[in-house]
Amino acid sequence: MKTIAAFVLAASAAALSTPALAQFAKPEDAIKYRQSALTVMATHFGRLGAMVNGRVAFDAKAAAENAAIVETLSKLPWAAFGEGTDKGGNTKALPEVWKEQAKFKEASEKLMAEVVKLNAAAKVGTLDSLKGAFGNVGAACKGCHDNFRAK
Ligand code: ASC
Image (tube, rainbow, N blue to C red; front, top):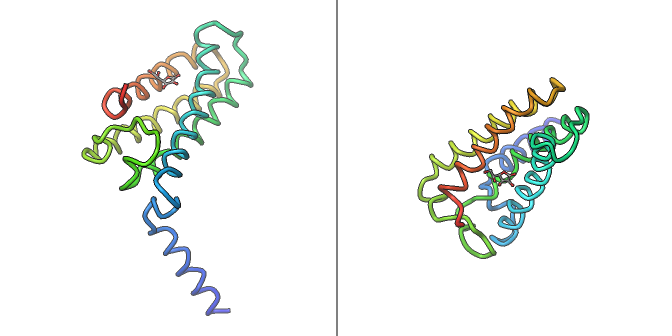
């Protein structure tokens, strides 16, 4: 029993310390993964945008559902920007992602922090509460794209 517990502990420690790329068989897989997460996130963020911009009627329940999905997805792309994933697929990521890693990390953390606020704002259940938080998330998307993504 003790041996099994020790083995499980050692295995989970190894998994946690494994570099991000090791979770992907090849760079293309990491690139596809991060693009997929960002695409699905943008889809759900866009549904909030449609309400904010008045293209569709505000629906508090749908807003809360979409914001919760955006929050979950906002955590995913970053582990897929590991060393060696600057090439190998159809990526728009600029070399700055790897040259300025601290700045890139800061930009990803800014997004995640704004998305937490978006999710809280969506739970309030009014269009007004959603609007400000939506704008701040959009600015965080743009800030990162301006510095780290090719046009
Ligand atoms: C979106 C989306 C982005 C951001 C960005 C904000 O809805 O898909 O990438 O907002 O355009 O400037």
